[in-house]
Image 1 (tube, rainbow, N blue to C red):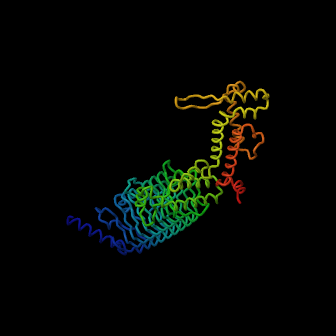
Image 2: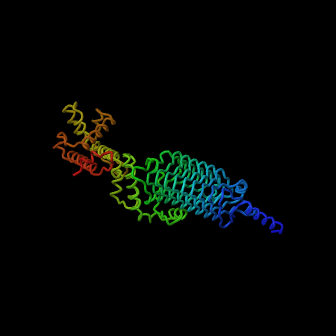
Image 3: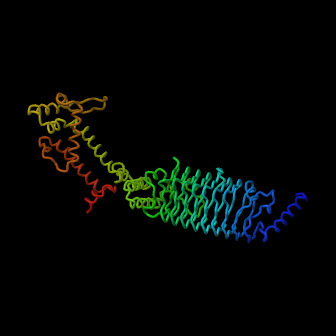
Length: 490
């Protein structure tokens, strides 16, 4: 540095001392009057405007020169104290701004604030209202973040219409009063892990284009995500520690289920990036030990929808929990229970199971072997001679060879085909099979003593039907069938 420049900087400092009644040094200082901090106290070739460790006892606002220099330098207010309102409206920071561990004793106004670099409010405290409405955090680089980790908002926090184009960290932030994020936009991850919301939090019309992290978050007065807009690939992370009052998580499970990611790796002692890497790299097999934690969260989620009276979402939550249980702990019986009955939460699978039984009995028992008996039972117009001939011809055994080594036995249907086409005969056997399966009373016309084999098959299918009734009553878990469940309580 030339001798003339040194003289220039020295004169600059002397002028600064003459203008400001008490000095504001770079490291620590005190502003006692309503005066702007003059950036001429910073060397022009410095990469930052460093106001760290300052104490501002009067309303503070950057002067015009500071505003201009903020477009080319990083502004540093780390460990500063603002005892009066701080006004940073419409400030443009091309290199970023930091307020690490700063205290705002009065209102902090950052409306229409714009930062192109890193914005760092870690561990800052806002004792009065903090207003960031319409602020924009522009830089999309992964290394550039908007970070409020560990901050405390004792009064209302207004982030309405804020646009974060980089990762936004609100990790372990304490919101003592209302937090407003309506119409805000998050183009990258929005991380609220470990944060605490004591009063209302508003995400109405908020846009989330990447993932949302609520691992370990506590919503003491609930959270409403029904009007939030999410990208197609947006995931929402929860953990066992995530807390919300039952009935006060407002989002349908149909919307949540495809986005829900349970984060068993969450720990408030790990940084967000470490949590994410730990969760992604952890072997899937080791997550079996975390089933209890997963179960705890899903039961809490079920209780939430139960209080809301949303039976559909309540049943879907429990069904998904059983799927997870099958994945980690389930055996063959649990698998069959899920396949045939959806673990009690998919009652209409019971109808499908019953339909399959009707089809199997119809095609492999009643049609090939006993159609003549069924035709006689269902068609009252048949004469005695017709019934006798139908029985006689049907008992003629035909053997068809599918291959030289495989033979298929089929009874003679030639005479019955004179009366009924194939579709009618199939309708007959399926109707009869369904009648046997669903009947609670064993009908006397089924007792054909001269054909004990037919009687045995009827008893077999009827018994399966009775077992299905009992199975349905004892196994149903869906809240939509509470009346039926009450009938089977002993």
